[in-house]
Length: 238
Image 1 (cartoon, rainbow, N blue to C red):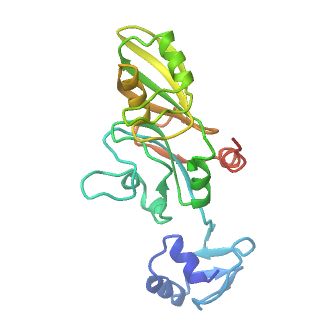
Image 2: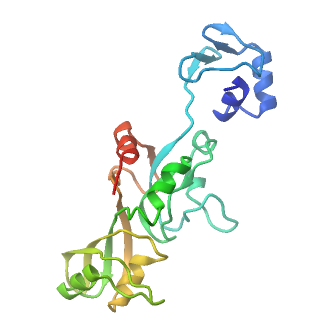
Image 3: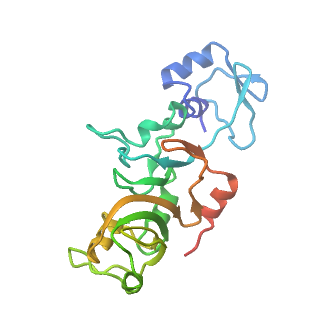
């Protein structure tokens, strides 16, 4: 990879700014001064320093966010704050995007990456990647609802969902539940409960495939995935 492209991708400025950095003698490769922007770097083998600080090149970034309510799952929007707006500049330069969507008022696990191949794998309808949600329901959730979800329910547009696994954590006038589904239709969890005459008043995503929400993340916080989490996603087979 060209040294100017590498440095630009890592946030050291535009190509023009990177050329000045090189011209000023700030960059070394394997302890040798490099001023030619066309110089090719082996990103796996060469040691690159800028102002004496060693830098590591990587192509992809993998982030886990605890998405807060009121923020939309998009890269940009004219009216609302997006999950990308919550990222530090050093992460935004990789041009990541949210994998799938959480409703504006829904909280919880959101994977953000620039790895299009992984995103396609996790979002493909053919893969049926399971996602688990915690929800508070206005109304008493019953065994009858469990059986209905197990069979699949018919949504307001006539679509019949694939079976979902409903677990009642607390039943009453307001019920706490966990629901695992393997598809991602628009407002699906809310519409599934509408189909059995109930209303979701709070919704949080807990898992997506092998990835589970880090409970130490406050709303709006995020962190990079661990190597173990990345390996689990890469090797995940449904």
